Image 1 (spheres, rainbow, N blue to C red):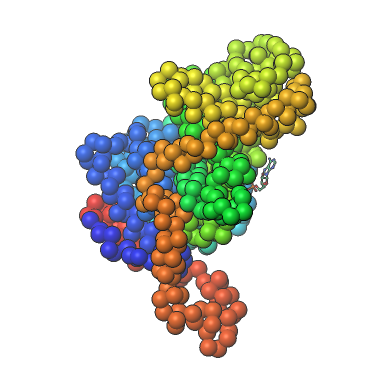
Image 2: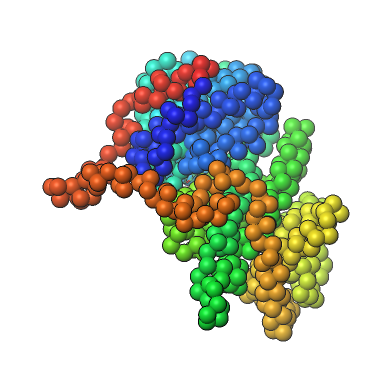
Length: 615
Ligand SMILES: CC/C=C\C/C=C\C/C=C\C/C=C\C/C=C\CCCC(=O)SCCNC(=O)CCNC(=O)[C@H](O)C(C)(C)COP(=O)(O)OP(=O)(O)OC[C@H]1O[C@@H](n2cnc3c(N)ncnc32)[C@H](O)[C@@H]1OP(=O)(O)O
Ligand SMILES: Cc1cc2nc3c(=O)[nH]c(=O)nc-3n(C[C@H](O)[C@H](O)[C@H](O)COP(=O)(O)OP(=O)(O)OC[C@H]3O[C@@H](n4cnc5c(N)ncnc54)[C@H](O)[C@@H]3O)c2cc1C
């Protein structure tokens, strides 16, 4: 087992080079994921329920800027589980589960990410050799973005246009070896490397992949849903979108991820706001905690409520995902469109809201929120990526809108699925709901507006259940959070409510008063509410959000760790004697050090022993 000592001890990631970050991430990842293997040996996790374990590791401080092995667990294995037939699962899953092969998921191309029916990579069946020929006909056909593909994965799921007997049958998935298992060298006909530095997730080792008439066995097409027989006959899937299953799964998992990030950010900002004293409410008094300002409460408290709303919603979505997948196994596809729309909507809304809330938490901490040591800039970089990957948010909301419009159009002719039953109510009341400044009144108002109800009604439903099992005091605080979340969004979306509901000016004014009253009521419990997320300092990794409140001492301790403070000679990067500052920056930017060598040393020293179970 690797000791922590072999990792860049003590030097914060921010001061590592691009290449050192990757090497650091490999070392940390093999240590972290060796734990998964150990837990599997002890029967504490299994291939069917590793989400929490792997999710905990991927969200931990050890892998705080992502992992080159993340996609292996997040998409490579779920794609095999979701799209490979039994024979293929028997062949590939054991090797993937014990990490003797490391995979990625290669769907997006330089030219296409959203419009996957327009992907250009081709897989053409050759009946004479019983092989598929993979080819990238253009530069825009190169796979671009797959996590871990740059220097780490030796296999990947590739999504390509399937051709057989001269006919195109659309996109299908294939499992493809891209590197030699012994030497880790790219195989002949494979062009592969990393795509370079990004806004965040710089430890994920996103890569590019091009094929030059690269041959794979017919049996490497994932054939659970559609098949190509030896003679090239195409057997189509029961539902053309069953091959999109891996994306639905990750969208569901991303909602859980947002809960973790939002809880961390609002814990950091709220605790800092309890420590930070700035300005006097009355001349001569001691400076007050910034958490006492209503403006600060307005910035932060809705994020506490949102973290609970998203957690409840994520759990409800996970239950729905598992229910629908059990029905799919029995051949019942009835709720697949609803699951797809729900996963699209909740992935888009929770990522967009979390990115906005994390940025607001950063801004609420003033200059100290801008320090990397606060962990808020890193967290923002992580969550804002989620607005793009696994389906760009705009496009996913359009998918939801498409489903809602279709559902509404069939309102009288079709039984409604659970998550859209509210449309019947809204339609029955013909948009003339009486407005009441109550939680129920606001939700009903949003049902009329339609787009936000799914999170709101799930949240409300769960809280009702919760009220039967919690103390009166906690019940009161939780209802304050429900109130806060509802009145916040009612005021945020006032234009819709004014357009679609009879809310009066007087009611809007009392809504505003009610909102501020709720903020005041929540203030005494604000720190307790974020403490209840029970996030240890090691997970927050933040000078501002530590439990003991020693903000200033920690800021100084972290500042002193900068190598620039340690040795004046390191100032050379900016103040080099020859003054060639801009040339040096350009030289550095043009280098992609990881591509300078075909195989990084960490493969032989760490990755290969890990894959052989020798670590
Ligand atoms: C196990 C995990 C362990 C731990 C994880 C824990 C922590 C980590 C947490 C989270 C993960 C963190 C990091 C992940 C990091 C990176 C991963 C990112 C990887 C990627 O980005 S992979 C690439 C993702 N790409 C996309 O999502 C592409 C987006 N585009 C599309 O999905 C499609 O193009 C489309 C849906 C926009 C349009 O598709 P289309 O053109 O084929 O369809 P139409 O619009 O014409 O609609 C036709 C019809 O089909 C229905 N439909 C569409 N999609 C689906 C679907 N997926 N399922 C079911 N049905 C679908 C649509 O509704 C229409 O139906 P209708 O009845 O005809 O209206
Ligand atoms: C950090 C990160 C990790 C990733 N990891 C992977 C991975 O492991 N594997 C993988 O395959 N991919 C991965 N991706 C790629 C990701 O899935 C795509 O970036 C995403 O699907 C968006 O596609 P795109 O980049 O082509 O953007 P585009 O689709 O080109 O979007 C650009 C703009 O066009 C708009 N637009 C596009 N289509 C429409 C439309 N029909 N109507 C209205 N507006 C539209 C979008 O809203 C957006 O504003 C990753 C991306 C990131 C950022």
